[in-house]
Amino acid sequence: MTSVFDRPLSDVFLIISGTTLLRYLFFAGFAYVAVWIVLRSRLLHRRIQKSFPKAKHLRREIGYSLLTVLIFASVGVGMHMAQKAGYTLMYSDFHEYGWGYFFFSLAALIVLHDAYFYWAHRLMHHPKIFARVHLVHHKSTDPSPWAALAFHPFEAVLEAGILPMAVMLFPLHVYTLLAFLGFMMFLNVLGHLGFELYPKGFTKSPLMGWNNTATHHNMHHRYFNYNYGLYFNWWDRIMGTNHPKYHETFERITSTPLIGSGRTGSIEVAEEGA
Image 1 (tube, rainbow, N blue to C red):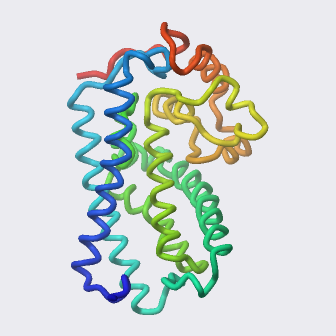
Image 2 (image 1 turned 120 degrees about the vertical axis):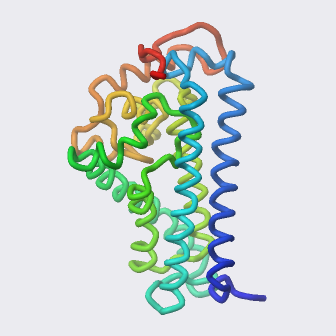
Image 3 (image 1 turned 180 degrees about the vertical axis):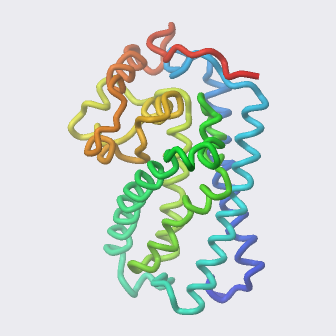
């Protein structure tokens, strides 16, 4: 059986671009169809902003996301070449480190990425960078699940940079990378869902409150200069960058059960411009 590390570069590019595209279409597509179409009327009371983006905004999100897929695949090819040259610590035999290390390394990679993302995100909001690069993502002031990968090409390279760095720092199994990419896409889509699915009190729970929510990231798209975190709320708490009304807004939006009726505390905004 041919090892993943022994395939030609053309095959590697097709495999990575294909799996990344499928991952994006599966998670973003499922979320959009299930929440924005099928369950829309039953979940309107959990809509974070009242309006819905126009079709052209969705097309823009998808277009930039497809470009990001190609950029991610190109970075993956670079990692493959680095592996062949002996510059990475990727491995394909579980017996080298065992299952315990597999799960430990996955958790470590997630925590590392959360820190990497927070500070890279802060960099993207530097005045000299924001308008030229990050504004592409922030044109979605009320994002849909399709916005999960809608980045400027430079930002897409920066976003992908966590993996080349990680595989040079500590051993990572190929399946660890795949599990991480699935986890990342799932929570990325959840953050751009535009509906809040978590229960009332979630953000103040001592057990679960360290996780970010769809409300948290939606408020970042709305207000720009708060709520920079990805998976966890640690860095926003440490650096004092949580929006001052984050918890209040979350409690308003979740004031009625998930499956219910009636509008509650959605952020008041006008529909995205033409």
